[in-house]
Length: 357
Image (cartoon, rainbow, N blue to C red; front, side, top):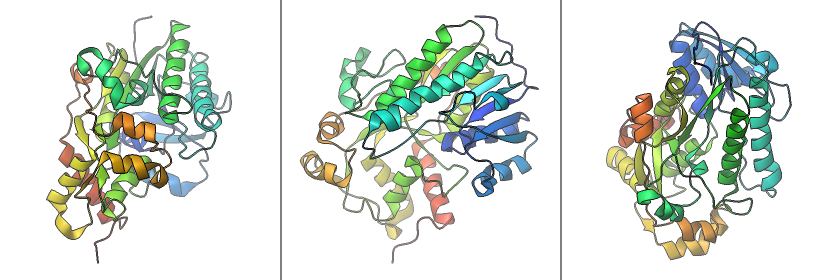
């Protein structure tokens, strides 16, 4: 690999610009004074761009929008011209799909191939930062026992997910493996991946429909009032994930995968933190549902919460080692209660969640 020399006067590309992580990353880049080439499906839909435009109006950097389709070869050519770094954050996400291979796995793999294939044709790009996920590192909590020391690290790969079990996790695994395969087939551009756990914290768009906002909304609108399952997992603030992407791009020494998880926690703890701060004004869950009950009714309530998922995750500890991202990228994680309280307060301030009657 050639010696990395990234010129900050050149523009950088961010795919999937209206996404949760992408928004905070673009904010960071604009505040640094960079020019951001932001790809979206349809730049004529101004309403979706208003939060990014508001950030750009107050920042020294500049933003330019480009239409691009993950599944269309050559779609990113115009946006990528002259860029020094490509942040590939865009990823297909579909829940309750009847055909995971068609709707999740193939688009994730093809999207990665189209974006990184284009990188190999654009001489100015010297580094790619890929938004992967910790679900490319492990499939279920039950897998962690076979990790070295019973703790997840960047050395681990998800080997238990498939089209039929945890298909989204499988799609992220396939996509990241495709990225490393393409990277190893050339010597001009380097690849760094950020592998976050469940991302929380206030984003640019409080009305976003992504999984993080959906879950937080359910904690406060009564959906989870009866209780939550003991689902241990890692959590990380979206601002810390964005900072990890930024540092991964501009630190010449950055290389490889970066497990990015601020806290080993669980849904019951999230409920306790929110209740301790906001009190009884909102119907936060106070009860932990027994595993047998979740196993029995889970699949009826949530199609993705299959009995195999329940058996291999509920009540089984989660443990991850994020020392690499802290040491090599200088990341300092925000407290979990800060991320949760600020995110929930954002939903309250924008009328997404309202007080109980």
